[in-house]
Length: 155
Image (cartoon, rainbow, N blue to C red; front, side, top):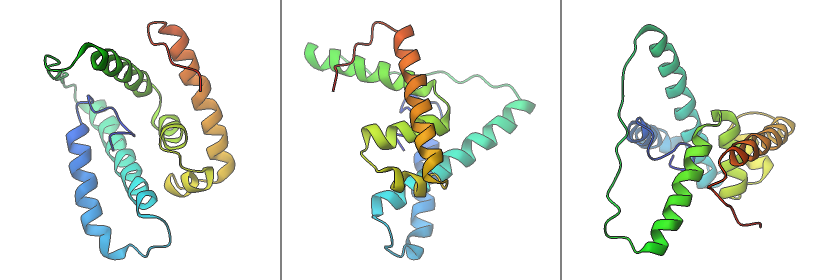
């Protein structure tokens, strides 16, 4: 779940709990036709989609304020602080992307899933996954260009 949504998101712990509960309930139905990691990502993606859909509907009716919680960096050495800052900024940029694009980019580029595996996780065909991956990368590139402080090394 950490890779599908930013750990600093206000609903992160709720999503983790909901995904863990759903995994526990659904574990007896796991048939082993896919790898366990693929099955878990599918489950997490569905939990995230349902949760976001609920909150969009909820926010149409009510307005709430949620504050971000930041942890202390006092114990980390300077080189890890720089690396952590870059990772947090990248996560923040990924958090600005829509769920369907972020999920595909993270699953493919960061987690190493194939397009076929991702199509099973997000329950769509491979051509849609490929177009979301292309469009998601373009969207991330635009966000990176707007945030020049985040310098990524070329692969």
